[in-house]
Length: 442
Image 1 (cartoon, one colour):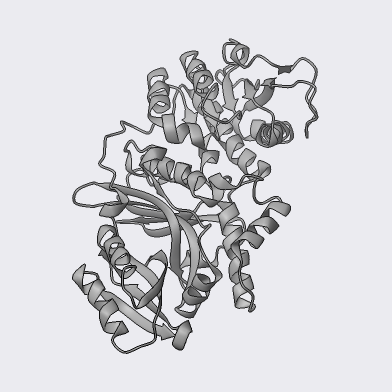
Image 2 (image 1 turned 120 degrees about the vertical axis):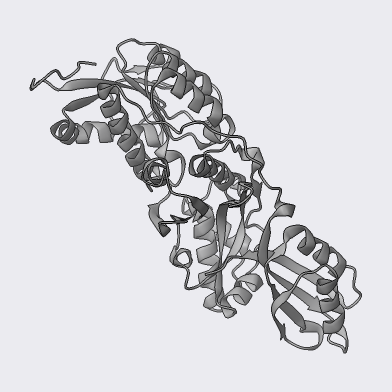
């Protein structure tokens, strides 16, 4: 790195080592090439991709890379004294973790989009960055091109944030959007058929488990909780429930009651105790809520604070180009900070009690297929009352063998609601207990 001294017109040349050249890595290399002049004009720093570590040097790529830049030796890149900063785009836990730690020890800022790594080993990596007095930036790890990490780390650093809720997985949002459209058009809204469509269009992986069962969103929720509240939260702390059991019938009920169903990450802190809850699950969202209008593969994050009120961040949450854009923004920030001898910091991360799902509270939608006979409603509502679960709204659908009771509760503790569901399933008059879907307010 050549520092700018005084009024010299010579730019600082910042040499970048990129680990991995898949969709994100290739898009980043192209972005550095096309935006180098603009960045130099604005900052006086000339960005240059100096080394790119890959597993297979002969594999076809979406970007042309000059001779001598490609290497199979990722360790050599992070230990190369001529490399100023490192971009990790390998993914997974190892060897990414070790490479990032080595880069930081060598005084190199690191930029990563590796949500799995940060959600499991983040505290160790943040501490290493603090010790090295170098940046560890990860805007692209959560919600792709949406600048939510920078907002939480910087703009809202002093804000008493109470809750962050968001659509942070584009695959599930696409599937639920298509299921809802089908139901509203008079179709079945079949989950399996919609998933197959999403896979055919490239919105879902061949093995969609990480997305549709909430693991991907859970990792992102852990990172958000850590940054928003300054506490240590890992992926294993997050309750996750996916969309594979959401039915067209539930979507229809939600629509009739003025809601739509979204897979949300919900991150909350109790103002008095400081306890944190982090969970991912299908949620009924009022149609007037801004998140209800977020369709297809788009993501959105809704932040609620004591002074700022409510803010929403919206955009493409995945894909090589949006993710590379977020990585590139971090590269520019890290380069500027390195030249100035400064670095960003999350501060000290504290231990916090993360509530189990049984300890959380929400409103709930529950549907029951029941016998259409006298005394059924009394028997059912008696079970709710015995567990101290208050009913906010109730209605009956159909008659005879098609009779169904639909309830929305007032806010109640999860443990009490689950006990209610278990007891309802033992009643002779209840033929089937439908899915339990949590509800958020306006």
